[in-house]
Length: 480
Ligand code: 5AD
Ligand code: SF4
Image (tube, rainbow, N blue to C red; front, side, top):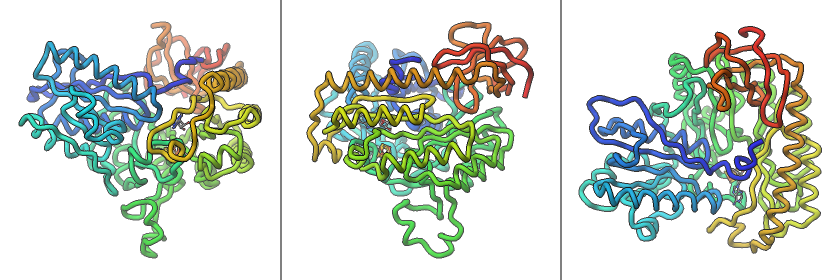
């Protein structure tokens, strides 16, 4: 298992490039950091700028406009972005006409301060203001600074058809909600992405139908908290209580949405991320059981195994309630993979609390995990009310213990597949060998096998012969 990835999934920047439009003359270099939502947002931004005369480029040096879509979730993620800005600064010395814009969560968190702190930045745009980019660029072209960090109650970009960038042409992300109302005390997201709002289900189905027509075979529905998806004609999730009786009776919740998309495209595979334990209903599990094309995989962050810490995190559920949910998942879906997010060293965490996290992991035996050291984020409730009192060495040691245990469990889970035949959707060539394909099972485990005459986008049955903690290795026994 790639430990680096487990420690910080926000490390990788990715440059995106789309097909050139011959009429367009300006060059856009766009790079994304952080969560899948940022990568998905960059596709919306690229789509908006294609209509403004831009083509994307992967050559930083030749760009007229450089955009960096940023992440604030941990301090390290912000430091990575600062380093990138230094690099852009060096390039600007060679190409002085180049404009630099900051998008995403850091833009929202720092606002005008960005322009003062980083002299290279010309443009600061928050996650709900991308439709204003054409106006903001006019300001920048006129030599003025441009900032729009207004968070919206309605914006879901439902009417912008994202241009698929840098992908494999087989799997795509479709966002279904924006923002988060949960207010976990450690988390900066509610401040950077605003209140929770859901997207019109019809626009989601339309986007999925278009993806299918373009040859895509798998869609991941994205949201900070997908299980609390609720469409009643628009508006904030928190205002649903004031909706009319008709709106209430005809509302679409997440279980209904899953049913809708799985029925609309029965040959497409569906995933979703992220689930919040307190919002995941039994109906969602039954809908997953009903549709073969909804993958049996749930990313169910727990953050801590100690009820006391969960309360301090404002997680809205206890250790016992989380375990009950795990039991329910295991009863309704017999072969469902489950993954976690865990934070080590939250303020006041004792050795006992840490042991409770390890014992919870032992109970669930997660298939995968994303594990982090607590990083205090300015403005959050934890930063205001609690002291970041766990020494770095202790945080590191606890994190390492959590990672080591997860590796053991991942190896245990992958071993169970040896000798079995699994369904794999081929995504791309294996990184290690150009004679092998790489794809994933419904449970999200990576499978590598000899290419033969198969191609990306094929669903193939693969007999598993070997396993590492992160990868299954096998041989195709036929098309699905
Ligand atoms: N420090 C460490 N990890 C954090 N996460 C969110 N905020 C912080 C923080 N301040 C982690 C949580 C979340 C994942 C996306 O990032 O585990 O589920
Ligand atoms: Fe942050 Fe909690 Fe919302 Fe996830 S659910 S984005 S951790 S506030």
